[in-house]
Image 1 (cartoon, rainbow, N blue to C red):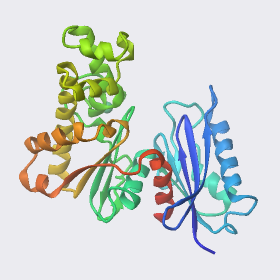
Image 2 (cartoon, rainbow, N blue to C red; image 1 turned 45 degrees about the horizontal axis):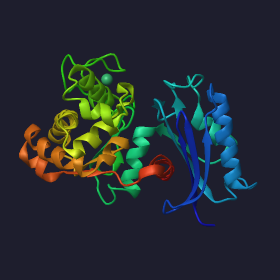
Image 3 (cartoon, helix red, strand yellow; image 1 turned 135 degrees about the vertical axis):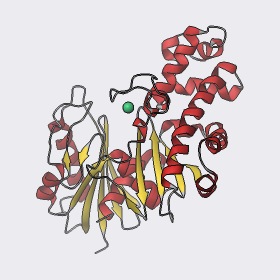
Length: 321
Ligand SMILES: [Zn+2]
């Protein structure tokens, strides 16, 4: 029987559940969406049902499944696989997810946060293939990250390592969700970039004119995408938002390079889809924030896994054992 693995990308709004082969190819995929007002038990039931659908009436063992991996959209105590909580969905406080899955399916389960799982996915199947020392940064509505040393994920003593989004890049800067000021996440998440662009359009109407036009005249509709599109056109307002984004990211990445001397920094998430518009100036500006040897040793690369990165990472976690 060929080895199979089950990956579960357990997001707060969307859940993707897949059966994969030993090379990480997704053989079958089930998708679930959280109902409005959804709570943890309902989401969990949907996920368990999706796994049963993938197994098509067989036990996990009879289907060749060696392990289940879960990437959860919130903090997880890794050794025990216990979800600590979700910031968006009620009912996830201290849910023993690993134990629940092992009891239900009688195969080993591993549960980690989605940033670590995304890191493993890029390491095994994406831009980090063949590398041993990488830092992964996911820039979406928030900023998460993961560290890999000598081919293994570094989780830290309380499994909280890799919180790159909460390193300070602007002392006294905007308030962050963590309660501190000037974190990378408070300046460079997709949400924060959109907010800086809106502030620019409202504070300096001349400089922000193109941003407002691209958003159909409604400042509330200005997003990070609006700013990057304006920057691509050469608009000074868009360029300002982009340049600030590059500067803060370059500070954070420069610090990471000096501290960790990795082979690559891999950027994923929606913001990284800006491509060369972001990566070309970012590589250039990072040079000014670190020493030459770690700069020369590292590549700053876009992530490769795209839409199904979460579930492919969960498959990589299942294989990690
Ligand atoms: Zn923070």
